[in-house]
Length: 246
Ligand SMILES: Nc1ncnc2c1ncn2[C@@H]1O[C@H](COP(=O)(O)OP(=O)(O)OP(=O)(O)O)[C@@H](O)[C@H]1O
Image 1 (cartoon, rainbow, N blue to C red):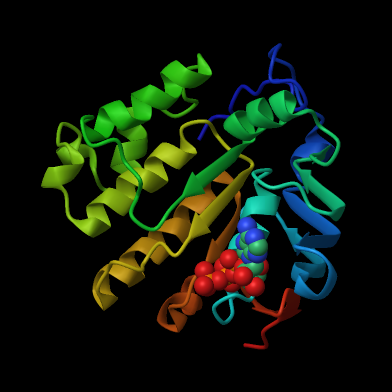
Image 2 (image 1 turned 135 degrees about the vertical axis):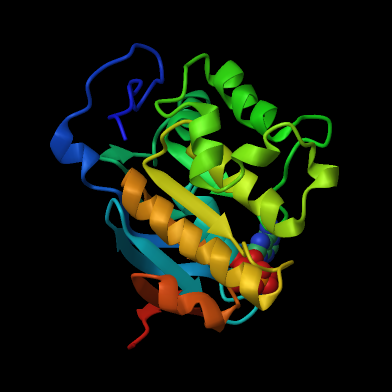
């Protein structure tokens, strides 16, 4: 794949060359705390979390309900500001960016894949990807049809979501998340609606695309079956993160 043209990481304005050293940094969380509420009601959704995900690495996050997994994705992707700590994506510190700069940075550097694929019902598969090009105002480094091909969906490029299976929608969701050549890909329960075979296919695909596109990918899952496809597994318990021994 070609090296994507990138925009300025802080402002998203001019097209610039990013420091290759920064480019290699993937995702780094340092001493991240996220608290909700106050006094006796205070909950630490993230309790001094450290996490490094290298470009081309797929890290799975497991853990019980309420452990803080969604909070981790939200903070890593700049959707939620942490109470304290540092969040760096490809060398850019997200904490301290203005809301506007953060939104632009997120658009250009972070891909999200949700449970259901979250596709626009009225658009064909290929138009889901083209919409991202329109929104960002930039051509994808890898053409939309080539991206659909990479996820095995080129044949269904002209289908709308209603005519796709759950697994196929997920594939389109993954291709769409790659349009902007993100540094970081955040994936929330991608196999929740899928049977065992399709679950394996989707996570195998995620691993392949992560390696091929050099993205730092974090996937939250309850599905222990698919962990075999991941480079590393970490577990969240009560807002704390610990490695899982394989
Ligand atoms: N907006 C909020 N306001 C108050 N508390 C919140 C909020 N969002 C999350 N929490 C609390 O933070 C903790 C972590 O929640 P989070 O959704 O990150 O967990 P999770 O591991 O993703 O759970 P699940 O697997 O059920 O999706 C929980 O105790 C939750 O109740």
